[in-house]
Length: 161
Ligand code: RP5
Image (cartoon, rainbow, N blue to C red; front, side, top):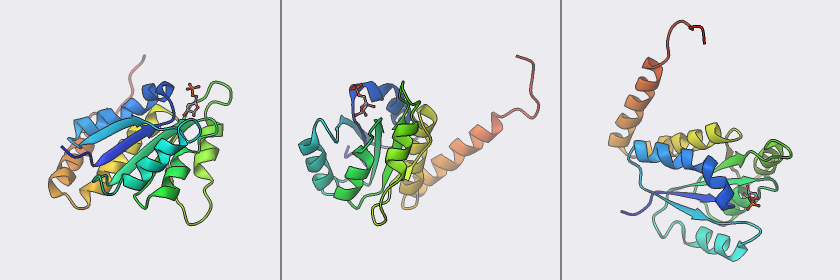
């Protein structure tokens, strides 16, 4: 099946965070591919990925990176597909470096920036689903059900730990 969502990340070490995006896409039945593409270590791969993304059928790209996290922004400069950025948590600066690197894009090249870490990765997956659901009623219905199930799972009162 042609992948609709491309999940890319700067390093193997990002996968433990970015897998949460892949998991929620699996849960909601959205085809996706996962690749390591680094802005600094594999710039030619980044260029090629961005250049061919639309022709290969991708509709949304989720890009996660840590530290000097240029991957999402560089990808946004190479394709008009919506790019969702995930700041990966770093040991030295807790991911604030990643967040600012991804968030502060110059006008004209937006990246939809999520929260730092696993929660951001999961929300990136859900954001991609929301975009695709605009033109896919079956997916929209699955997303509605998913959201209703989440609401139903939240208790009305807290209990002691
Ligand atoms: C970034 O540098 C990657 O996105 C990763 O978050 C960070 C560290 O990479 P490794 O040194 O673990 O490969 O490019």
